[in-house]
Amino acid sequence: MQEIKDRDVKQEEILKQWIQESSHIVFFGGAGVSTESGIPDFRSQDGLYNQEYAYPPETIISHSFFMRNPEEFYRFYKNKMIFRNAKPNAAHLALAKLEQEGKLKAVITQNIDGLHQMAGSKNVLELHGSIHRNYCMRCGKAYGLEAVADAAGIPRCSCGGIIKPDVVLYEEGLDQQVLSAAVNAIRHADMLIIGGTSLTVYPAAGLVDYYEGNKLVLINKSVTAKEAHADLVITEPIGQVFQRCVLGENCSEDAQTSDRR
Ligand SMILES: [Zn+2]
View 1: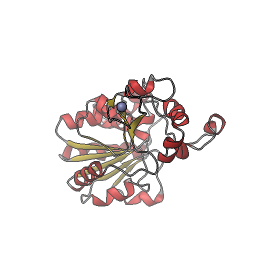
View 2: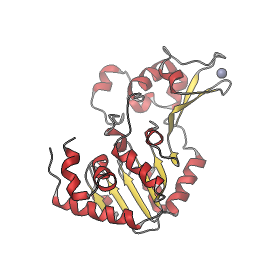
View 3: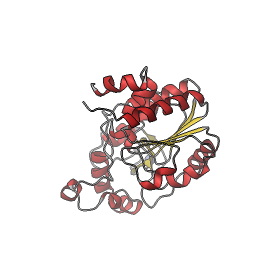
View 4: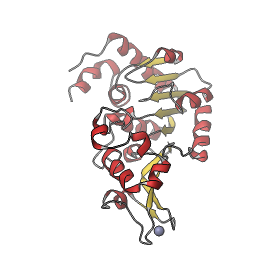
């Protein structure tokens, strides 16, 4: 059991109050939102890849590599990017609850796991696509996750074409419609919560500039000095913060019970 720091209890009380006051909350999330659901960030290299794969993740998950070597791409993709048993955590559930209450207008995510929708969120802007959508490169036929996950080797369409995930690979651009919807949502937000990612990394760094309000909240385990211009910074795992501040009864009192799970 870990003791919550005094400072963060105070920060979380402010977060709770701001959520109460706001009616156009927008959430922007990165890989850290899903780590508490057991989905590791494939970019956080721990050396394992070097033993198991001949290329770094950034090379394998690139457009040119997919076209050149789909078999090796899919070996990595199925092992490291598809987690079929992952369930939404407190952060996903809290955001769905806030949307249902009419307080939250959009979730913008860099994650491709579909956990926000699984938690019940409706307006989810997936900047990097989704593992749940897949298309035949030859005829365009749509497939779900099973067609990819259950295939031995390269997943193929009934027409014989290779199925490609609707996931933004390295060397590929973001979907412009999704991006402009994200910009629009942030522009109209009265509160912007950024979680599980760093403010300094693309595309968060560019998107946050569109925010015109004074409730910019950053929730991330590690925070850098550059991020001090956020109006509120909480350096705690995001699922635990949302458990205490949205799902729980009281920020400070629930701090202890949620850690005991
Ligand atoms: Zn086809």
